[in-house]
Length: 438
Image (cartoon, rainbow, N blue to C red; front, side, top):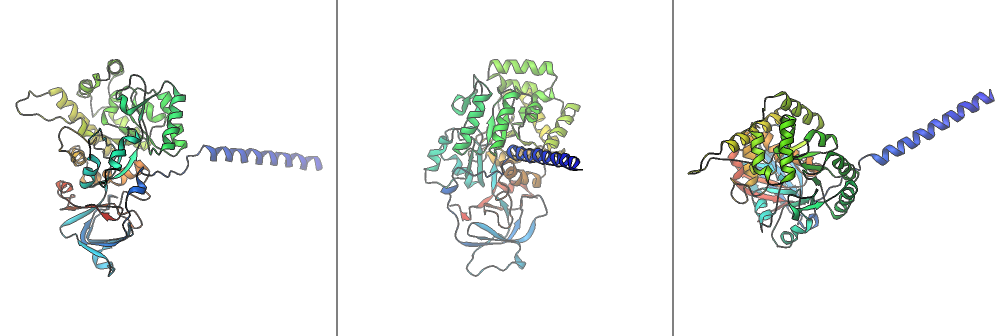
């Protein structure tokens, strides 16, 4: 009996030892709880007033029914109360703002903004309702001038340079790596510098993307990618969280023989993609089994897609011959965007900042309009501009919707964008961190 008992005692101890180390290993490899912050968080004044916005249509960003004749109380930079005006007691000391004939939305979040040396552009976007933006590929120092300008700017979620291989498409905005180890080391440097996302560029193969994703996820950071010479599903299986540009799906939707021709000309010449992508996209069959499979794959993976349609938009111009290739290619891009959303893919809004058919500062609104043209409903587009982008950024615990205890980043527009989407251009007031932007 003693031998029998000792045997089982040893087995029990061994099992406990194995379980302990398995648990320890699991904890060590789990993603840490993300605490992603804007690089200029301490520079944004926090409101210290109590403000009551009354008699307004509240579109909270979550996609549900709006609140008619609504009221939002803001106190010390946070949303304190949300509900019907008739059901909320407005504090006596509150600054009252009537929202009659207007709609209140969460501050717009821009997933794909490029400064590109245009002075004052972030401030202009803020005036037009964009309270948070993410530049997915520029050195953090590029924004020093905007931060020191004295102008109010949105929350800046910056990536530091995108990770690319030689020859880089945009040398000034890239960190060139030669192998996976260099890429991983750079991920950790950027995380230490305050990057809130990592972006991989199209020359990186899936093997290096996998190592980048492992390193970024170990720091609680999402990874997004611009892909044209790496097939999207391979990159997503390697760990990618988001896709920048609808054109990143070209290789997933055409026969491999055609895709390899395009891939080789782009690898030989970065600029070949500018015309070549339209030549590829005019041939894509949006109603094909490949497109159906891609949509199901993206929906099952929960991948965020920022189409940036405005960057590729083509319109016929007066006294200029019609470019039928670009026209057909762009039409397919819009149709695929609508197809993906219909399949449940997480579409988000990214402006690209400066685009051909939008006035300076209005690229974000143009991108939303193009999503409407692609078949998304106004409510879906507003969610793509607010709560879905907040989830993509991993900041939805504090931003992206009009809910009690969230930060008061708000946009007041004249009209009802659920009925007439043009209202998103009728900016009346913008609130950042509980303070009205002048």
